Image (tube, rainbow, N blue to C red; front, side):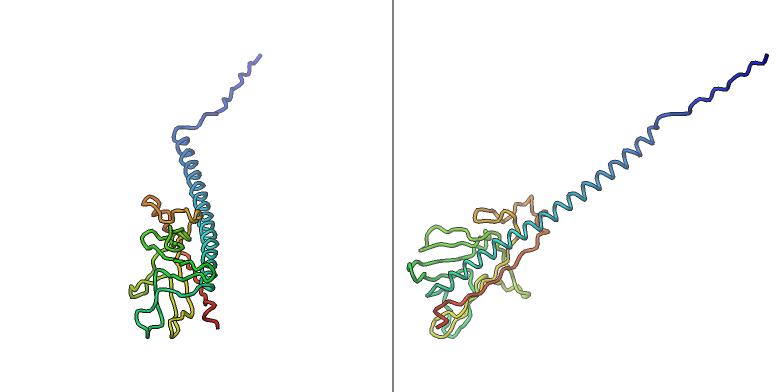
Length: 205
């Protein structure tokens, strides 16, 4: 009687080696890093869009409010330095409200970037934050208020020209000037230009 010996075939199953584990971990880490970068980029794009939309909406509201006050104002300042001059660029405007007789002052503080509003030289109220300085190609500063005068010391038109840094928290209490730590983060924001023009009613008749 022959005895057949069964050859046992061992299942050649073994675990991952240390090198294979390290390669798998490296691939997983690279995929996670790529996912995080994509999420961060998406979040930043969303934040930029939100900041620009918020700043534009608030800025247009402020410009509309100023032009409405200019239309009803009278006795505007500053006056031209020379009676022959017809155009004045300034960082402030002053005028009187015809109904109340109050002196209204709107000025731009270039150090803080704030557009301020006050009545009868009282405590200023912030109209808009983050208003930055602009210059011509030759370095000449561009001031936010441009007054066109007619002969006889009557203002014909006032143009408001502002450049504002986008900020989704922009309001009368927001700090639009960024800290040093946030300088690189906010450098990607493109300033928004806001322009408005108004003719006082007194110049229409």
